[in-house]
Amino acid sequence: MTLIHFDAHLDFAFPEVKDVRLILDEARNLAEIKSQLEKAILFRRKKFREEALTDMGNYIYPAMRDGIIKEFYWVIPGDIGEFRRCRGIMKRILESLRKEDPCSPGAFPSFKPGFTETRLYGRPFYIVVMDTLPAVDGPVLLDIDTDFFTVDSLKNADPAVQIARRKVWMETDEFIGAIRRKIADPRFTTIAHSVNGGFVPMIFKTIADELAAALGYREQGLKARLTAGEYFRKFREAFDGKDFGSAKTCYREALKLNPAYNVPDNTYGPLYLRAGNYRRAEKEWQGMLLVNGDDGNALSGLGYIRLARKKYREAGDYFSAALRMKPEHKESLAGLAEAEYRLKNYAKAKDLIAKFERLEPMQDFSRYLTGKILEKTGQPQAALTSYKEALQLGMDDVDLLTRLVRLSRRYEKTNLDYLKKRCEERRKSYLRLEKRILLKKGNTTEVKRAEERFRKLFASFPSHSCH
Image (cartoon, rainbow, N blue to C red; front, side, top):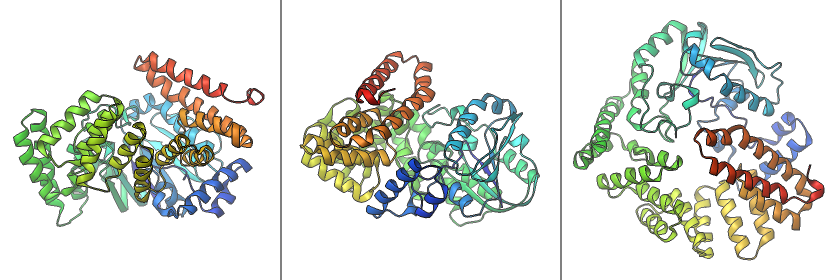
């Protein structure tokens, strides 16, 4: 069927691990076959189920792969003017997809007002806005992510932008009216709340239920969830006014009706931490502990602030407190492992990483930290293996690459050419994205620091391998 996807994000990504048959069918050269087979072997060795790799950020790929989708419309937020202002972002997305697409998309598309047409994974692919979405007569898979309503532009699609300042730019009744005019047969509709991860602030969690109700969905718990949302908005209003007594009452009422509000994103703390605003993050989590003293997510968040400030013993205390409430709290296990490593308690750190990996077996962070522990305890070749796994799992941190180059020079020189390519890709990515963001913020000190790290990284290669 035709997929019409309303979202501030594409939600299509070529998978990091493929079935061996797909690797052999779709890889475009021997280097891709080698790297993809190595990753597939790693995942099989860890007994990791391939289906678990599908998430709300990449689920459109398997649907397209399995023949569910015949053509794909991505409807982005904003009007035709916003489409024009975001053309550079869309071009970068398309260029990135073309590098991985095993099916030739043909010539690079031209951009018309509010509309562009190309091919993705062998299917027709269109990027449009609501005004330029054509009327579709046949059966449609209607896919709505509620961040379409709270992200007013692709330029603001990162959740760490406009923290605590997001607003709804299109009302749900206006949206439903447009849907009914343009889509004659929405055969199957999916709606994503998109609150976990900060893409939609928790105070807008009810948008999904409001849309579902307007589209005719009837379910016993719907009314309770809408009422819970009202209580949560009142909680946030009281929280912002520092009326923590009223905030506690409203939060408890919200949880009674919908326990899904008891998550890390019940405050803006995670987003402020991600943005490096530790002062605001601290206020959010300290306030939450006045509302709910048993909030392990807040305790864990305060631990990560202490980690960032290099107060490792204090960090350990916060993570330990969170783990007493929930022994399998993954974020606290990872944070405590990092704190113990920094305190040179390598045996404790290794034990914590083992517990973390029983819950999250395929995390690049845990492989990276394991490598550092192995280096500190005199096992450099085992560390090299662990660092390679972190790289295979997607980490491309400059420090990781530097460690890989240093150890490969001693134990695996045949890997240096491949590492040089990965380092060059990482530098291009930095120049294309991160450097521009840092300069826009006026953070020239961080730019100089990053460029010095890249200089040292490339200087660490043997002279004969440098260009």
